[in-house]
Image (tube, rainbow, N blue to C red; front, side, top):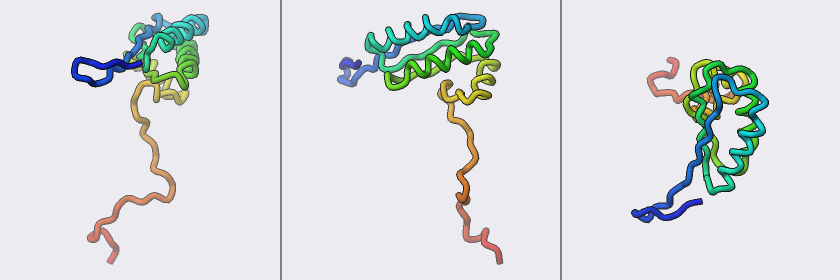
Length: 123
C-alpha cells in the first residue's frame, strides 16, 4: 500500500475512478464496482471518484454512488470530487453527502448547553 519516499515518509497510493456523463445509470454500476475493486486490489489505499462529467444526475447516479460506497466499505477510503450542484443536492437528499468529504451540519445533541459566561447569568 505504501512505500517510502525520498524523505522517508510513506506514500499512500490513491486510485482514480471517473463516472461517465452526463447521467450514469444503474447499468453502469457493475462495471464501475469492478473497476473500483481492481483499484483496491492494485494497492490503492483510497479512491477518488471524479463526478465532473455528471451534468444531468438522476436517481441512477445516486444508486451508482451508493453501490460504489458499499463496494469500498472496509477496503479503503472513497470520496467523490467534481460534483455539481444538482448531484450535491441529490446526495444531500438521500443522506450520502458524506461522500463529498464535507462535514454535515447537525443540530447539537439533546441536553447539551452552550458555555455560559459569568456575566450571562440571570440576576
